Length: 233
Image 1 (cartoon, helix red, strand yellow):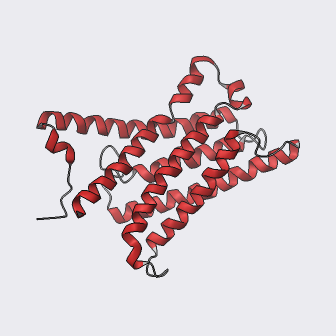
Image 2 (cartoon, helix red, strand yellow):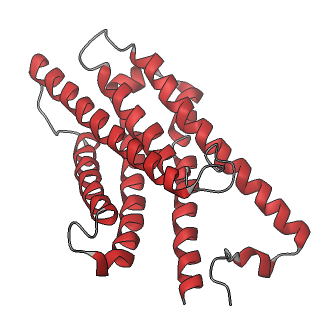
Image 3 (cartoon, rainbow, N blue to C red):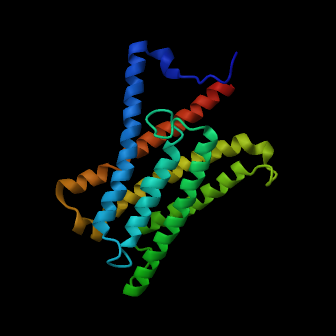
């Protein structure tokens, strides 16, 4: 039996017509997740008016890091609706590392601008749920990056025998980090700055948007894990 052929549990339960409908719906969802991540980043950048204050750089950099870099770094591995579906897996891994490195740099810079803004205005740090969960998200992101380093350099770190488990931990932790980031972004919409900037029905649209790419990412990671488990069992 060949093990290099991808297994699709959908094909066993659905007919050909239903399978193609599922495939097109999945492709549409992935494309919409790409558009949502990019759209949120651009709109928040416009609303923040970067350069008008130290704080103005914080939402710009954080949305770029988590709404765009992290989303694209995960979705580039999907075969449906991704603009990177035609490149090799080796190139995808390199792009993934580039996105994650950019994520770490921009999120750390965004944190620095927030700390500087709080110090200048003499406000207290870590007094909101958004800030507390944000620190947890940044910590989890750093730990996730450390696991990723172990995955890509197993021989150098003498972890070759643990590679399958490390890959599983890397994917699972990545899902946790993304969900933490999603909740952190949603909590930011309850801040005084955001509620003073966006109101009414528009606010509710912003509130719901981050959940859509999170569902697509969650489906991709869990499907990839179940697929690997099915093939290797």
